[in-house]
Length: 366
Ligand code: BTN
Image (cartoon, rainbow, N blue to C red; front, side, top):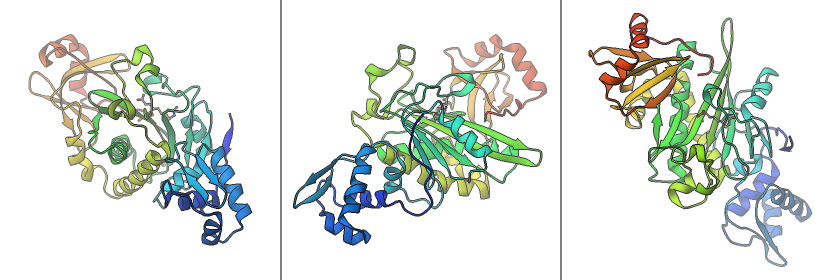
């Protein structure tokens, strides 16, 4: 595992300020002395920062007597590249980038246990053991996708924390639609991002609690960005998609992450103050399951019905054939071809258990 950039302090790193100067004049040469004058440093120092940016994957042309020119947008989500796009106060101002990591959730969990501050982000270009929900692995090839984890320390009760993944989902949807206007991102309750009926991203929130409340939440986000259809494993074919597959364009992962952090910072502060209520209209308009016949699996139990919207407490309303409604807290949702009556009949034991206790239990993995 190799950290390309170490955790950097809050103050702007100089390389990212050099990058901002180049980004302010897209596809144009900017003289080294002009950058040096703007940033109050020597041309030799500027050259060193240009080399550092190149080592982070930025394409910077150098031409004698003309200066430096950035070609395209920086892609690799290093600290310098992300902060050149970032507008947040806190989220992502400290960021650890890894060329390779087992799992960004694992690394960030370790940082959290060691006392890291809220807003720390861990990003990897490649994960060797990316974690998905329900103990699954997350397909994490190098060079194409975004794998990041964000540390939150919400001072709210467990009930509200259970709704956090939905708000994160809205922030991811907002970020995707900012870089790809017109994409149309839906949320498949509880944690999946879909576009065109296929999964483009997933969220894995892992919480640590103390007797007096929540200690921290590691918000893990995986987004398929520049992944081509030919690199998709057969098992995911027809189920997964990427920004590139949807638009035939390539995207800057650094810009996407910065947009995500911008949206999340705003949404998170609203959610801390007011809970899920302000987000319900957006959730309703992005609800991929509304009116669909589904089967929900949790801990070996199945319950079926017709999805009837995301409720104020973040649970999924599941309409039963007799007209009653179950509130489902968590689980794996399968769309079924069966109508609600048949599906409910197929899962009668689980459904009757649900009626006695209409809310499924809270889980540590949100
Ligand atoms: C899902 O199963 O849909 C959730 C997938 C979450 C994957 C992301 S990738 C970054 C972070 N690190 C991990 O190991 N998992 C999450």
